[in-house]
Length: 88
Image 1 (tube, rainbow, N blue to C red):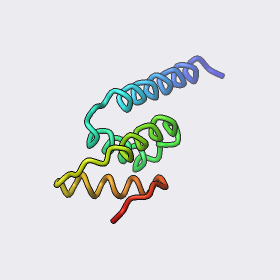
Image 2 (spheres, rainbow, N blue to C red; image 1 turned 180 degrees about the horizontal axis):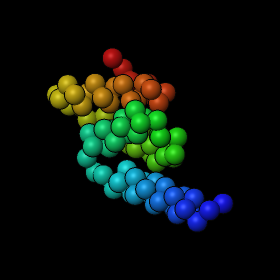
Image 3 (tube, one colour; image 1 turned 90 degrees about the horizontal axis):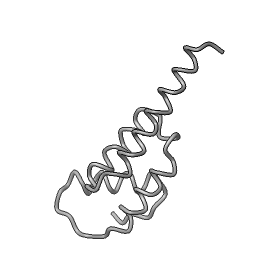
Image 4 (tube, one colour; image 1 turned 120 degrees about the vertical axis):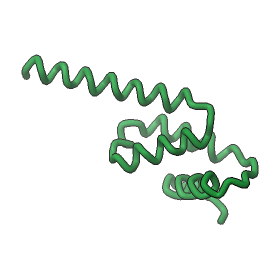
């Protein structure tokens, strides 16, 4: 294994840690859902399964009504994709 490979692995772990911090640090549900959606679309969400589960649990438990169609649609789609019951 070369030094360059080790450096690349360190960069990857550093990036993963930064994303975890962003996922955990966001207070705005829309921003959290958008990040989860982005991670899924990029195909890297498997690196953050525990963090995404925590975010989705919080979003599922937060049952406040919202009039924003974008928020409602994103919430509905993500909850259904992650196996939560979301009433249409």
